[in-house]
Structures are given as structure tokens and as C-alpha cells.
Length: 126
Image (cartoon, rainbow, N blue to C red; front, top):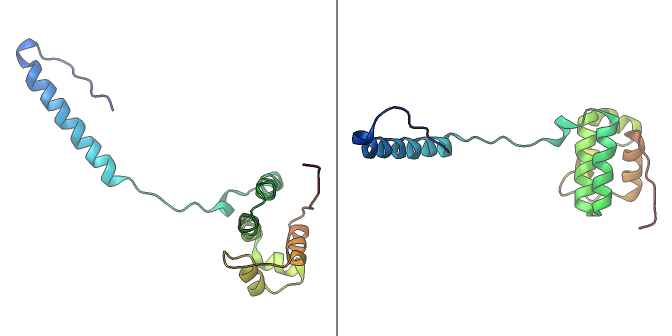
């Protein structure tokens, strides 16, 4: 943070510096107490098929099964879980459960969801 002192002269310099420091401390305290955070919802930012493909590609590239399930759930929610359930032939509630943080979907479920999202899995040499 920078506080710019303007005006004054040598006689008031010490007092002006003290006032500036006091103001800086006040502003810093205010900034700390008024900072608000909001949860990040990935599904709010997956707007195009290219966004979805890049997000899923990164999750699969990482290789963490929990991250992959989370990513599939976020993408399915962004597209509408009811529509994904209809396309996969699976129940909406079972999809929510399978793609939840506690879920452990079968590989067949993962493949159905990926296809329902208009994507496909490919394998390349590492």
C-alpha cells in the first residue's frame, strides 16, 4: 500500500508522516475485515464444448480418480443432470450419488457420462 503525502512543509513533516501511518494501518485493517470470499462453482464456468473438453482432459491427465469423478460431476451439473441421466439411461439420483465426492462410479457409468456429454475417451502413449 502506498500513501501519498501532499502539501505541508518541514515543520509538519513528522506529524504528517504519523497521520499517514495511522491512515495506512486503518486502511489495512479495513481491507482485512471487509474481504469476502465466495465459493467457486466450476460448473458456472463451463460454457462451451471446448471448455468442457479442456477441463475433462486436465482431470484425466492428472489421473486422480476423485478429481475425475469431481470433474465429471461438475460438467454433468453444468449441462443439467436430468438431461445427462436421460442420455445415459441412468437414474438422476443414482448419477448424483455416483458423481458425488463420496461416489465410486463404475467404469461403465463413467463411459456413459462421457458419451452423454458429447465427448470420448482416447488413449495415447505416455
